Image 1: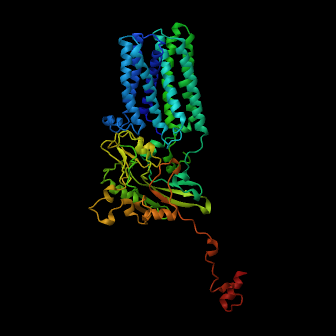
Image 2: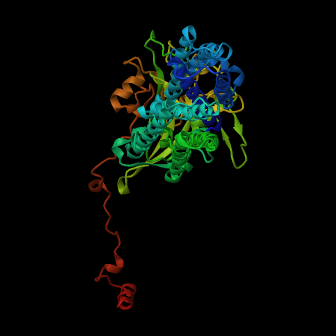
Image 3: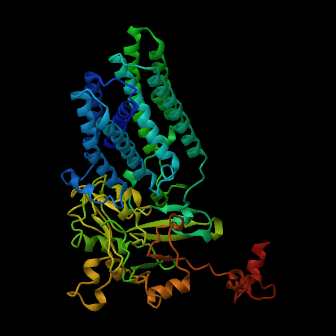
Length: 315
Length: 251
């Protein structure tokens, strides 16, 4: 699949934003963190900025961005619509949660309820995003349980690296936060590894024989394409570069989204004060770049069944 | 609504394409483009038509495949267009309701006035039936010539899709596949018409008829080489000057 930059930026940034909101909501609901005004302000600022800029960037690949509001109408059948509805509806509890934390410096009583709702909406929105991909039967690399797991784990992992930085900045870091970072790091490493093993080991989804129905006539191969130059279908679904360099790119992605930020985050737990902040900032930089590489690969490695009509030998 | 209609009339309009007959002339693709660039989804873009990167929207494309190996191999021409599936994922994924399946005849259409051009439907289609019109910013697809089949300004025999009307080999047929007694349904029954990628469970309405098996026993029926009528030079007994000369020179 052709990796559209607007979608890569959208899923990476909104994922990190929802991950950060999720953790702020979780720690507020559990009363595991002080409702410090400036910490709250900074946290909500980054989370909202990432979510909103992600949503705006996702409209860039639309043919008619001015009609984007219409995408909220088909929540009964479309996961893309559900994602939009959840993203918009979530801003209610988020705003109230932020109001309690920043203005009243409280997450007790009713404000705690909004923290819980924030956690719920953050998870549901990322879940809806992942289901857009996980329900496309045309793409074997997405139509599997790994997709949902990876999207949710990536949101929490990138969110926890942001949470780690902000709590260090405001001197609110606790061992519990360190534990979340370490645990979600292990989770993302495990899920992504399992996903790549699945991708390498999964047998062909649909064969050229099944695509043409010419089962009884022996192996089927393309003799002549209908068009001499690439058409929309081939440009959108026929991306091959990543598969050629898959091993190398996966290594780079793994280093940048997991190993380097993981080691940097580990350093922040026990390091000297002067080292903590730069390490935490670097970890955020690496994890965002790494996640974008990972998202790029998620698209670029995916094979679509339609390419069977254009000479692909499997899908 | 992008939900699949539950209360249908049972009518399933669609095409039956005979891969045994198709000669790969691309006339169906050309006539489809010709009609539809002035029809329901008009215009269909044609960018850079005389340049290096000519590209545009076509609802119908003819692929040519080679099957089998050696003496058993054969060429199969394969026209590909929207199959108007009974479970069209392209409709279900649409966030705006622009893509819909008609309850009255099962035709899958795009309402271009509310399409936002997110392209998700083209990702959901395994058959590549949907092509994006970058000029209009909306998705386009085969309409089963909805502006022909119900068009009372056309004579009765012209009320069929442009691809069917133009096929010089009669490889394409249009009809109601929901009616078991229709001509197309009987054709599917007799010839073993099949679905493309049935494992994906989109339940396409359009059916393909397989190429007929190659005739067997061909070797025995092959015409035998005839013996020469006037085997002059081989006839040792022939008299006369020239046969003698031939024998002398042949030594």
